[in-house]
Length: 98
Image (cartoon, rainbow, N blue to C red; front, side, top):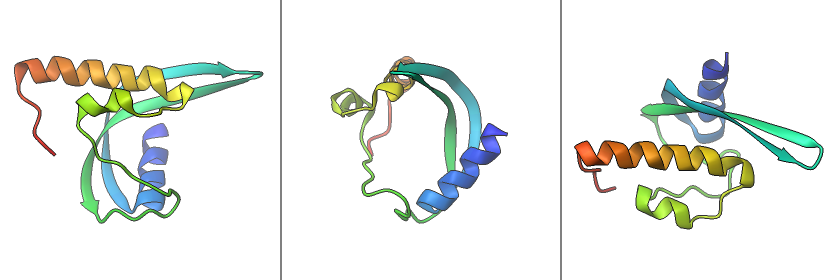
């Protein structure tokens, strides 16, 4: 269910068709009385032209630039896991330049 919801949301909000892959992880962050839970997945772009239907800005960046960005507190553990995975992958093959 989270995979189909993610595909649908990305299509609605960004106009992109994606293939949802392996789960990166589930992350829970307590903010006051709320607990925010994120399920994160690797995704592959299949088709579409980027449209900002529900967002003001999009930024494509190299993984080395990601730590300098201002992330929401609940996003930080997922971003760290993504960076760790990309760094481990780049040791076996170089990352492509954007």
